[in-house]
Image 1 (tube, one colour):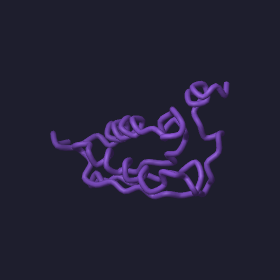
Image 2: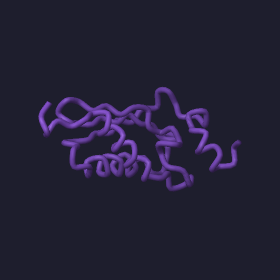
Image 3: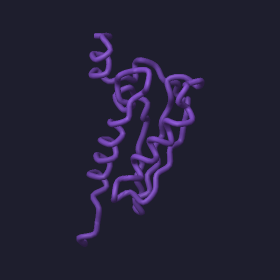
Amino acid sequence: MSDTTIDINALGEKIVNVIKTIYDPEIPVDIYELGLIYDVFVNEDYDVKILMTLTTPNCPVAETLPLEVEEKVKSLKDVKDAEVEITFDPPWTQDLMSEEAKLELGML
């Protein structure tokens, strides 16, 4: 293993941590805890693909939120490129929220 090898799992944690700095503008909870991030893929070339959804197809930040996710993930020094794919399958529901998010929003 060379010194330049990047631990994919550690990089995945860094990606999640940066995603947790992005908040839904209408809900005081980060998009990761809201359950908007369905999956994060990192390939051997350190290209990242993020599968995410929005709370509704008509979400007011549908144009800007995915771009913000891409830009913040691309800002990590070990990430070569990042792409966000939006899906509504399965549709987002409150069941996807973490316990932390539900507690923050007074749902527990």
